[in-house]
Image: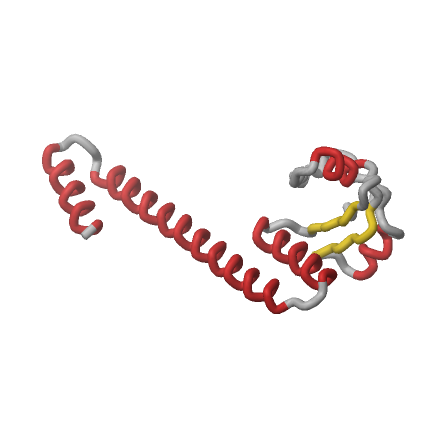
Length: 145
């Protein structure tokens, strides 16, 4: 039906000489592509979330659940890597789960973070932080370049 309306509108406007033929066609095609892209992204997100719920429900250990959450967060957000830290009452990191890092990159981070820098912000503010990739800024302390 959408095609019929688009064709009807396209031909009636072109016949009246108000909009050049190719301009209207490009606009209709662009809107259709944009709608398809949004629909595909939404479908992908729903699929990932559905799989996430199933995989989290199947996990038996807390560490496994936390690792899976880090993996899913990275996948859903399209991030290069993700980390999930668990802090105690004093704000010290007691568990640290990473996703998207090679074993060498993870080893380069060293012992558990102490909750300074970016992780300190996360602990103090209690909200997620997403860092945009910016090659001009100096690398974040403890994180892969």
